[in-house]
Amino acid sequence: MEINSKIKIKSFLGTSHPSKIINEDENYWILIGETGKIIEIEETKYLILFDKNLDSLGLINHNPVKNSLWILKSDVEKISNVNQDFYQYQAQTTPFASGFEVEKAQGSYIYGKNGKAYLDFVAGVSANTLGHSHPKVVNAIKEQTDKYLHVMVYGEYAQEKPVELCRLLAEATPEPLEVTYLVNSGAEAIDGSLKLAKRYTGREEIIAFKDAYHGNTHGALSVAGNEVHKREFRPLLPMVNFIEFNNENDFDKITEKTACVIVETIQGAAGFIMPKENYFINLKKRCEEVGALLILDEIQPGFGRTGKLFAFEHFGIVPDILVMGKGMGGGVPVGAFMSSKEIMTSLSHSPKLGHITTFGGNPLIAAASHATLKEVLEGGLMKETDKKEKLFRELLDHQKIKNVNGKGLMLAVNLGSPEYTLKVASKCMEKGLIVFWQLYRNEYLRISPPLTISEDEIRKGCAIILEALNEDW
Image (cartoon, rainbow, N blue to C red; front, top):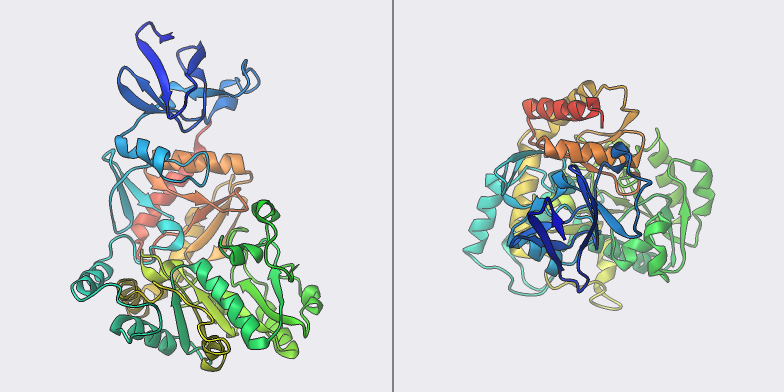
């Protein structure tokens, strides 16, 4: 089949079904096949993408063949071997990954192999606390690689950087938080914290929250509050009951049978929902009344993102168990859970090895995490967070913005509908700004830049968002 009598579609690579053109005009091609597959046009490989603007073309209800793809010619992108291999060999989490190719990243910018610089308002989903390739983090990694990498499973050898990291965390957090268990990710830290609470209390029931998100391991998914993401993986952990965030009438469901209450200090996937005044004070009081442990998930707001090292410091309480991850590593994978020595010791006996990990406390990761924490504590970044939040809120004033949730540099901008938010995110990317959306509430545009972002960069990025909002599609 030919387009303009010159360009021939040969086949979809990776599938036995040939592509077939069923219609065309100067704006679009319609092909039968699978999105994300590769076609070859005169020996050049292209990626097939869904048309993002079918409704604006007036074609949405005129698809003549079931399962065909509507593809704007402007959306057919030439791709490299790396991009092709990404779709063919690397497991995908959705059918519509962007496949954006990264050349390098520095400071507040990610540079694509297309030669463009992209201002990053996402920071790897709150992971790059100090921006990309921060020199103190990079130097810490290089120094550690010259000494040694992995030498033994967690908890056996006394290694300098993991010990320094745990000591600095103890010094920077209020009592009774004093002992840290280092793991590989936030989700693993959630699993470890649940085991710790059950082991220490001798109880089985867990209270979690509707619309909560704590990660995607089996344990973390069990305490997630969105059934859409859970139902295909059941059965999950038993004896997990859910209550509503910010509803104190649900506190009577926390009883002497409850081992722990696990809650995000600021609900993340739900749209950066803040706790009401005194909510956490009263929640902690209820836990103490019945002997349940309070686990706070600070994987997203932790490490200075709200203007405090941990967000719970805004709310007048200290958790029994504190969970952290993401921004802790400054760009490397890490997680941890922290508690009093009395509580944490229960994982070391009866049985011993109550929680074990091969790579937890890895010296390379600990070196990067220690450098990140030290800079957050000493570099003055937390003092600037409130001012930067106010600037974001001042600039993001537009009739299409319904409201802005969150605190500090974790903000969720409500644009009214998931479809519109995804379009705005796509337009921003075209204009050189990386934004994202919230996992459960796609109508919220996610803004979680590095703490190091400058006021000029905030102004530049917000101008791009407003420009996208002002366009008619």
